[in-house]
Image 1: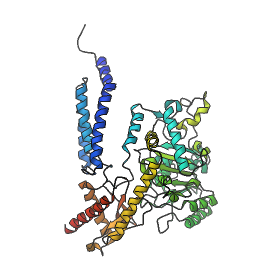
Image 2: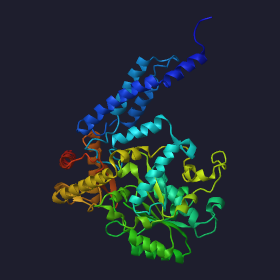
Image 3: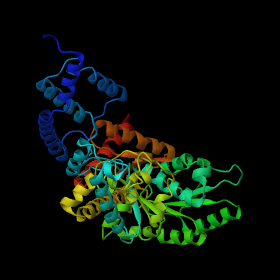
Length: 508
């Protein structure tokens, strides 16, 4: 008896189409060709940086695609239909995104990642290599352990005598490290929670620390009001002498300090704290020292700039984002512990359905014991692959080239009478204001708003992508030179574009 396929048969045909190796190969080739053309165009400085579209329009466009499937009629789409639809999807995705690989991308601390690294990430995603227990992702686990050891020793930790892990982003990395600090400092807080009596324990943090540090205090039950800002010096670095006084004062009040959280480097202007001096103070007061080195940690690969991290290896914990200055795709963030025993203080739990008591020796390789995530993607594949192709010198090159771009931009700002650099950069983060002659005597708030308006027009035009910030409560322009394809000519063009937009705003 013949006739229409049953609904179950049709379902199996659709599943077979989705899993087809032939279709995957065809679309993968199409993707490679399309991305090759895309990178050739974008890296050659062609087209807009940000393809600006209002959020509501983009959301509506994204929703409309969900109704265009060749299988929308509950049928089985043909390979030709899927190829055409895939091509249209690719075109839309690339036409509506932010082109970080343009040399005119000078924006957030998100890099123009090395595209080759994504090919290794693709393998992990396509084959769905996940971690939690060793046997689910044996090679993913091996790769993570290998790069943790290499990066940790590069940053000054003693080979084979520290612990580390990779997690999804700097915010989660800081949270993980500070959870460990809390459990070590407060004993049974993980099991028993916090007693209600006063005084409450506190976290001392760099006054310019990333907002995820305060967020972590809230998540950890310390409370955001218990984050005590550490005083800064005139270079916006944590002041060790004043930190010493602060910790002594807190001890006198009977306040227990969970940790001191320093920066290498702090987000606003890229300031690197004097870590050796801070370590001395923390050792004196027997306080856990944590360092957020999400952006600046990669300076440890550079002979020219690794002095910025002197004292980092004395911290009890620190983090470093490979998806920032090691130029791999997001997300790949390291957490390091100077004392390897501390890696098991973060979570004191048993999960018998995961961890096999018949192979107790494997527990040390089960990442689920040390990370917030249970299922975790093979986040180290891109870094491992890039290192395997080019070696560690490439990471030093990236740091040296982009830090030098920061210095070159600063020199141009110093020489320009209508620009005001707000600091001498220690890395590739530069903050400044455009102050034309007409606004020389204007109120600070007026100048700040003027710079914010310049930035908004600049990014919506697609000519450059930069960001804005507040320094001492006043708006400013902030640039991160995090595309190593950027050259001096682009810096000159940036200042010219800012002048042109500012002049038009003043005329208006």
